[in-house]
Image 1: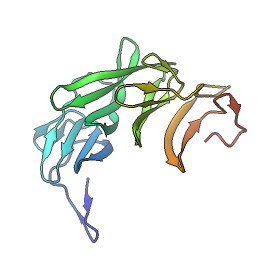
Image 2: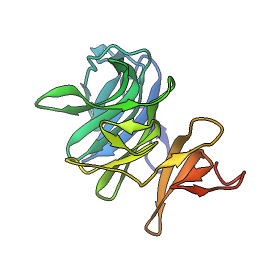
Image 3: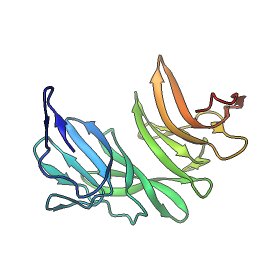
Length: 196
């Protein structure tokens, strides 16, 4: 990890001892996640935050089969996704300073199901990836979360020859654009070449 001050690169002091997969900034605090277990001499499994001077641990308590893949802060809670499972469901988790980490949403789908991305857009946190349901919401591959309620997107997306997957979303001119592997969106067929 490094920082750019406008004219030169500099270090951030202590470094994670393994891969950093994602980062987010909220209220002038940098949140990171990945496969690391230490930053300098500080123990912190898979997640930590940095205030510009000091690192603080956010040790992740769940058994995982890999690192935390994505991290986003939304309405004063930290949300994380990764390859950890409970009762056959791929999970997300949320963190608050008062309560620490706890499971939030499980997803259902095929054997490679999972939430592959989180994106904070306007008043919603979007969860997207490869799933048929998140919690009890039937909205294939994408849902929005207000902090108290899940929102679906019609019939979602589909791929007639295989399972569909959303890899990224962006908002332009009031519209949400999704990219991934699919050839059907909300019942509308998309010709080859428009689905990626």
